[in-house]
Image (cartoon, rainbow, N blue to C red):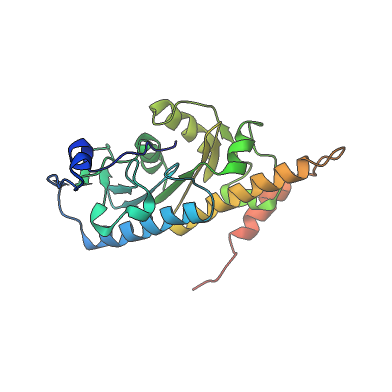
Length: 243
């Protein structure tokens, strides 16, 4: 969802032209959380610089033990500082920071509670959002669908920030590491922020590829079979450098 643009200082601070300094919520920030926050902010800024997000129309989270750090609501990512750490427990209670967490907190927490996710990325990427309005599943246009667990499903529409949206997303994510949200955007997760982000970028690229190929008059793109995707999935297990 496009986070509401508002001044995190509050109405009184905005009028006075200075930032209020409310009492911090919860405990102090641990070193590992400070490090994770730095990586989260870098990832959030990357979604903007790579064109996957406009303004604050997306959100990122990363889990450190039982604390989930999340981007705050309505704050442009280039304004986030090390002192803006925003974190909640797995029940959604704020334990770190003073800024209001993203309005999509139910979506992030549902994924963190239900899967082995350590990081979640949600965007409003243009091509992926366009595809979400056209099909119930992204056609198997490229073998990298296997990196997300198979053909990418589209979760039915529900209002942003609702438990209903989170429930739809979890069903679409069954056996997958990413899904599309109808008329909304993308949702991916991973063991790290880099992995979650890379899956988002791959999903957007596959959506763009399918839209491009299917737009040629008189022709339809060839699609991969389940067996071909399964073979790729096996090959990907051994992909990359090994220790």
